[in-house]
Image (cartoon, rainbow, N blue to C red):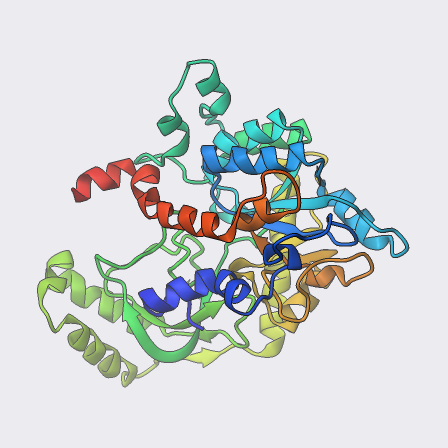
Amino acid sequence: MNPIANPVSWIYQKHKHLIDSLLLRQAPRFVYARNPAELEGEIPVFTFHVALPEWFEEQCLHLARNGYEALSAEKFVDLMHRTGHTPRKSVLITFDDGLKQLWTVAFPLLKRYGLRATCFLIPGCIPADSSLVRPTLEDVWQGRASVEEVLAFRRGEPALATWEEIRIMHDSGVIDFHSHTMYHSLVFTSPDVFDFIHPGYNTHFYGNIHVPLYTHDGRDVTSREPLLGMPIYRSAPRMQATARFFDDEQVRMQCVEEVRREGGPDFFKNGNWRKRLGNVVRRSRGAPGVSERYETNEERDHAIREELVASRQAIEQKLPGAKVTHLCYPWYEAKPFAIEASRKAGFEVNYFGHRASRPTNRPGQDLYGVVRVEDMFLERLPGTGRVTLAQIAQRLRSLRSLPGRLFPDAHRTAA
């Protein structure tokens, strides 16, 4: 499925594992059981993105008061290798992307409750200026900052944790850092135009990760700068794309030039702008010298392997002493060729979302197929204070106000 297809498809793409776990029961048994037995013989892996102070502290408290061990990445692998051992009350907490709240919210709370976590970074999206260190919940507890300050994304502020913040967390031993690929990329997979970059196009709030990779002078533009009028062809995550489609730069720039010549953002006030740009694409494709093609399997495998190697090297260079051997796939999925490329790139563990054939992780299972369950189900783990599915649903409804909390500047502007 194209993750940027339309709002409905996008919601499903991002939440399909949550939907599947609820409707198809593809999560561990404790998620649904009314009175599950004490956790034994399995190691649930939980996936987080944003840590909210109230909710994340309740989750940490649930683990701590019920005697759960939050593993390091190294200990998780050790337990998974022990085929004759039955782990008890062991979990792995993972964070994707490495957003600001990993530093400002999760890190202080993990320390407070004596827990560990693993974060999968996108090193190619982290700002090069690594010196910024922002207030955290520890500053809130000392009266030096507000909760809003440590939670919200402000204009001009990096959405991801900075390299200096990451270094401090790494040095503490509380959080391990591994790879979420170098750029969290989408790539074109078809010559069919799906959309064009326009003022309302959702590029995502960091890294332009909803803008597929494109080339300039034959080289990838990894910043994915959104060019008004640029065609967006059918796309898929890099690790799922069977063959990448390379569009013609001449065709792309004809569209961009048409928009610039006709008033830039004002061009899109005309109701037929999609038709006009579609005509530019068709006309430009007929010009001499236009070249569009698909990559070969050899090119694909080489490109994926090189990106994964680059992600390992980037993190290890920034974090002395780190050994990056765990890979989490963007959008939770990957094709077999990407898994094989990860082996050749030196990764020893691969992480996904839910999988129908493997609801949980048990010692002896394939480390290239680790499954994860959504963070909201953490408090369904057996123990005192276990929440109901109805309470989880209520929390999900409360998240409708989350954009206003995370993006107060944008909220005020919209109002």
